[in-house]
Amino acid sequence: MKITKKMIAGAAALTVAACGFAQDWDDGFDSFDTASEPSFSINGSAEVTARAYFEASDITGMDKQGRFEYEDRPFFGEMKSEINPNGKLDLKYSGPNTDLNMKIKLNKYSLGDYKWDILDEFTACAYMGDFQLEAGKMRVVWGKGDKIHVLDNFNANDYTDYIIPDYLDRRIAETMFRAVYSTPTNLRFEAIYAPMMTADRLASSGLWIPKASRKLTSTVEEMLTTPISSSMAGGTVTPTTIGALMNASSFDSNSLYPDTYQLKYGQFGARSTFTIGSVDLGVSYYYGHNKQPSANVKKLYNATAAGVMNKTLDSILAIPEGDRGTSLGPEYAALTDTVIGMAKTELDRYEAELPELEYDKVHVFGLEAAFIAGPLNTRWEAAYTLTDDIDGDDPWVHNNSISWVAGFDFDVPHTNININIQENGRFVLNYDKIEDSEFSPFAGTPLDSLSSKFKASYKEFDVDYNAKDSAWNNKLIVNVTDTFNHEKIKLDIKGIWGIERGDVLVMPSVTFNLKDDFNLTLSGLYIWTNNEESEFDGWERNSFAQIGCKYQF
Image (tube, rainbow, N blue to C red; front, side, top):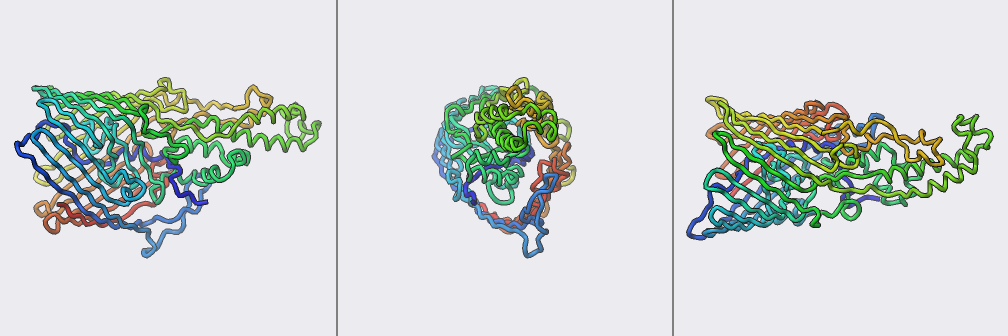
């Protein structure tokens, strides 16, 4: 059966997706346009891109190490390709003390599965002296980081095309109410309330489906197309695949995906920015939910083990009682037909259920700073994320964590070259609290003597577990830009290096201004993965070259 809806998309490799590159964003409303006469403006863009993947080919299976096996690399004429037209329209009305802004977005996603995205943004803003009130579907960026943020929590990310689009283009606009108060000094207060939450959006088809999704597709297909009990009894769902399912990030909204359009998923935050001397500072607080869910798979695992054990007991029943200890082992000697009958009755209690998904509640406390140190423009962000798993001993809930961005940019003297270097990191607190000690769902039951045969580790199911099995995740992000021929030619090279995992991603582009506002861009993406512990693993053959034409008006 071919599954036509989005079934499942893995969270593996998404931490690095947060290292996308952002456009600079105006941090506030330091100056308000209070023109006496109303004005109306229209602008936008039309763009077409054509992309060819160098190595992408169909997956034929997996090897013993869990790595994907592919068909032969394609010849030139067999390279996978795609063409993407995109259109944007920005309408803005400005009154003496009000603004109304509407942005329309037209692409294969907004005209396809996500039609609500056609209305990309729609905001109304009123200026009342030092006070400003804004409401509508909008994007708001918090944090002074450049190219990357750890304090920007209100808007979810759209990873259907991975991190290729610019940061703001990847953010999904959310319905919000925003109030800003600017004092006569440099102190500013801001509060935001969003009555609902949109979860991170992942690819459900094509080359950018996360590895965990590809790995589990066949399993989920069988679970949806056959009775759950028979699927479990057949042992199809193993502890390994359940562990991957724990890290799944998106499910079909009609089955496992929680409905986040409820008040309990509302988001709130407050922020204050100010200047001390030559240092711009900010403090912030955010309350909401993790935009990638955690899953409790205890019942699913128990039912899986129960199904396997039921079949094992049937095999044991075929052996005469007196011969079981000799042929199978001394621990089987006590398994008489009576005990096995009691055990099978016990096993009938376990009902096979799909994982229970939930978006963990989070409190994020943030600090930010920006200042000039000699030739360097420095930017900093630090966040402490507080969850319900303070002790770190609950495998079904995300642990508390600390994340940060620290970096700088500078202009190379006598050139147009700008070099931007950022270090983005995250440390999961109490990561080792989920021990490797084994557990069995049948300890203390009539099957206690066999419980050792069905052991597993909670660490394998821990929502914070990663293939590297490390509490640290650091990345170095570099962006080099240059211009030539009176800024008619622009060069941009972006790169990410995963420090612990050794992965490399490079995104070069060169843009030619051919005439007026018509630009031609040649760009590409190169991915190199170190091993199966890579966050890019599963995408290691997705390197591509792209050409695009864009007209802005």
